[in-house]
Length: 225
Length: 115
Image (cartoon, rainbow over the protein chains, first blue to last red):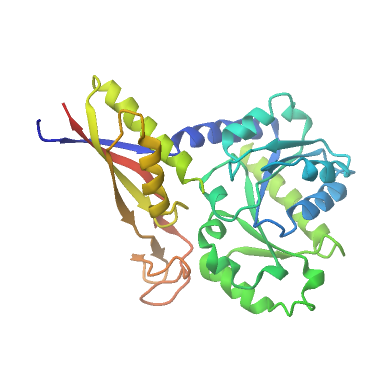
């Protein structure tokens, strides 16, 4: 048998996903829809946060949501209470959303009818970090009940996100949450990261968050022109 | 655990490349794996073995080159290698270093082929 020969290849393993994500991003921009994705561990309050966001934004903006889940449609049912269009993506055994799943889910939606599209990822702080979904903004949620060092345990996902949302602030006192320590953890893995304090229950920080999204979408629209 | 789907993409890529070259046998795949790729080396290695089973890649080795995270330090005006992905600050002057120059790689760089 001959000796093996080394041939150079240079191919990004996630190229297929990145190509679809780029096409999606292009479509979103052309349709004028601002796309926000949410990642977090299971149970950190993504759905409650999103339900509140949809409810608060819906009177003023055309909002919709896609929500990923391994097995159930419970989250879509909860989000639908906001009266915004919602679609569930059931991923089966797949622990993250990828760009092709988003593309499929959007097939029968006219994006021109939307101002904001939210994509709630499967609850998982590991796998979603590698997959671009074509979003404009990626939020990572961290609830005060999870421990201040969550960012240090999952630096990759915090690093892939644009903004950190501290959720369940209404429980901060009960769990003796140390805000400074959490802030230090976040800044250690993602220096300069914006952090927004929220409680979906008391609505603390929610209108500021919605204003922030509107401002960001205007900034993007201005750049696109 | 998304390493299996990534391993399957690697196998697929290598098979395509092998076909393109007239069905050469691939004995090893070289991969650059960044510390911020979100992929766990051990999980990827065992997934690769599984993914290669019953394909033309069966028995091929996956050779991983680990790529540490490098950042640009605005204070020192130079590129530095992070000692830990939990601490994005310059190992020399301690300044925060949000700007990453490498470390997200997940890239097949070369194949060892037998004609």
